[in-house]
Image (cartoon, rainbow, N blue to C red; front, side):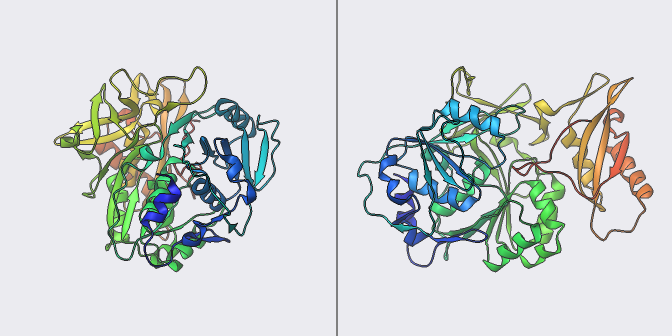
Length: 457
């Protein structure tokens, strides 16, 4: 079943909308409309690259093209031009749907460019035969051109349960829907009978929070860094969700407790998912980590294994593989995806301690930045922190912490707060993990996918 048909099936009574910052789509009406002019039928069987300056055109194109195109990729806006050429060559796109600046079709190896049109027009006819469209997504966290992962609508939506809430939820997300985390929320809204509020690139946090309140968003998703940034803003007080979801980074106990305090009426989940492995599991007890009893067959079609200290997943929700010649294998011989996330068992629970590729070497000893950040973030005056390394002639590296103080906190001077943070770190961590330097900064840089930028000095 195509996404368009699935949306139609999930639509009962009441208005359904996709709201962008400056434009919107009446979803029920849009099922009989098109923003691709008279070209949609001509896209049957095509491999389509979607280039849009904003999320709303990308959302509309995904709805229109699923079941018609052979494959499609909605490209995030932060992709470098030279990487875009590499991506286009790997995926062999023959058509580009554009909403914004017009690229060179020849430079990207495409045969034609179709311009997205707004407002939408009535559909004259649609292909009677539906294809199983490949949904292509880009991985994050790489220094070169990102890898391309191949999903199906089935693998993307397999973890989405039917909605029974009345009225249906109004979803939103800090993510961009052209990345896996945001796409999951887009699909949950589309298949759950609800509406969706989209963020806008460069939109100030306070303006987005005001739009969330104005549209009465009930279900909201983002990374822990997204949520920390939002909770720093006083406009968050006007936003009253009934469901809060975290994913994409380690959810430590501090951010879970902060969300419980800020939204006492809300259920709080942290989900484990990745572009390659798909949705693994959801933890709903408002505690960091996950119960050790979840390891093995979860009974939900997902098998969890811990091997060499890393989390590995096997399920029908994992991607079908990477796209392009000479691509690496996605799964091992037993069908498991190595997530690269390191976990540690303490009692009856596993805790995330960091990424295998993010380890800092201090005199031959391993330090996970996230483990140190978790300790620093517990301090009552700390809003968020980022731990990185700095080169040192004796130990190779030393630990440095950038810390954002909570707004309005003036109970201690910087020197006093620095001393308190270091004392807490010494009590909770081995000496080699204790920061050598603590800097106070006004903010921390985030990636387009909502994660802390981690670059070592």
